[in-house]
Image (cartoon, rainbow, N blue to C red; front, side):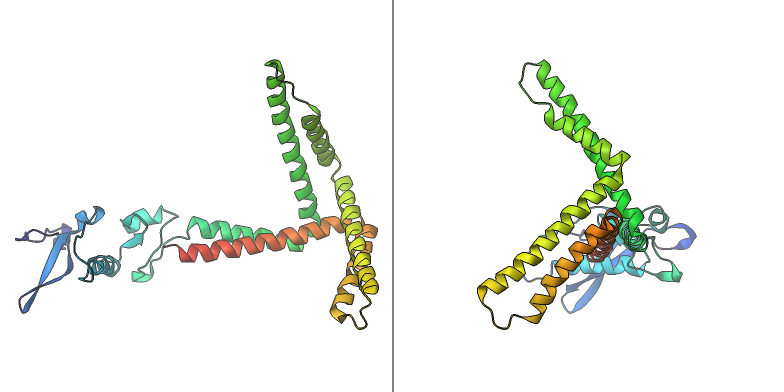
Length: 266
């Protein structure tokens, strides 16, 4: 790993040593320092030895010295402070002179996701309507792409139906032009499903002959009926609010998950 006769440490500007102590090697009853040029830290190291003799120890010493010098440790090696100031994916393990690295890109995305989730909860109708319009735009774009593909296939003699692509194009256009209609349909379908689920559950309890059904079960079934009826009565406004709240909770959860994953990655 190191030459038998190490050369003298190289000197940098202002008389500062550019050599870093790597560790010590036992030589009989003495321990001798082993030095290496800091410029060689960007290279790779190969350590060959049998098991349980300390192969991991050199890596620990190198990383510890990098931290003590105030260098930045990240995946792929070390970078200087100047490089770190322009890098968004670095993780600082040193904090000398109150200097710190910028936030990683993953954490930036996590913060944006959480802020969007909070905004969706505060303004559920706006974000619910926006989500439906985005869905309409995606359907329209998907239909156009599918229609181009189908037309190209038909020109080559492949018998492909154009009903599906045209249905996507028409449905996406209607949703973009009239999002309230889509929200009203969602309210009717979802509300009807909740009412049907509640009625079916109550009927099943009665037919089963349960003498004392669980109170929480009955409350949940009646709550499903009431929520479904309320959703149908509120129409597009109710479905937009519900969609906005669900979207906000999902965005906040996704942001927190990204933040936790960023803390686990070094």
